[in-house]
Image (cartoon, rainbow over all chains, first blue to last red; front, side):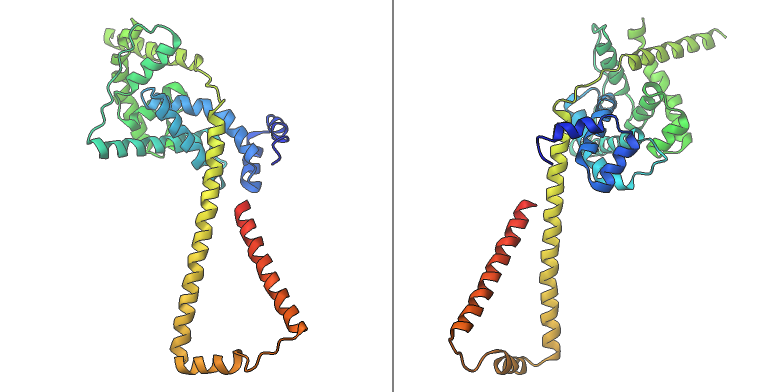
Length: 189
Length: 124
């Protein structure tokens, strides 16, 4: 596309519905349509991945970039029953799991200990404190709790997004809630 | 009873914390992020085209190899060489203006075809 026309094309896609943007990306390989999808979803995905990676900003952004790249390549296989944001989250979560497995292979163990964030009383501190508390959980439980508590998803939705049985979702929630409560007790008091 | 109330309070408190976090979720700037993603997509597309092109080249080589094997299994090499010598190679060569013109046109077409293919590959 002509460089002078690129900003105009971006303005044109700003008000387009998500389904149309996906169609344009898949059917005609329209990069400006996919670029608009990235703009709309980048913040939420990056935040979710920061929550999963103990607020490691660089790692979370790398995973998010890779997730969007894979999303572009697999967009043709995206089934419209699910929300695009849920599908995107699943790609990002799978990349996070791959990272955990790779790290385990390289270092034999993954150390996810809650970080000390006492003293940070603002909302930024709260986000980091929650991410640090979540780091005490196993990766799958961490994602379940993030979807449940941060994103307000139902247990069935979590099961669908992550592709795990409903029973596992319930187990993770029941086991992880007390752990999170104990990690966050200092923040509450 | 007291334990249950304590547990309910804790749950509510945890829900409140996450609710507070949800309401104050930061909106990250996409200044460089989106452009990095789009650059990555362009790079991946080019890489994919290159890989496809390489795959086609290998298929060409494989096809030629299989053709040669099939040819040699059906035709005696000496017979093949004799047939090529008798039918394809000219027994005499006449240099005339018309022949030179045809040869020049042929070479020119081949050169243009080569240049066009290279330019097309570079544009990809």
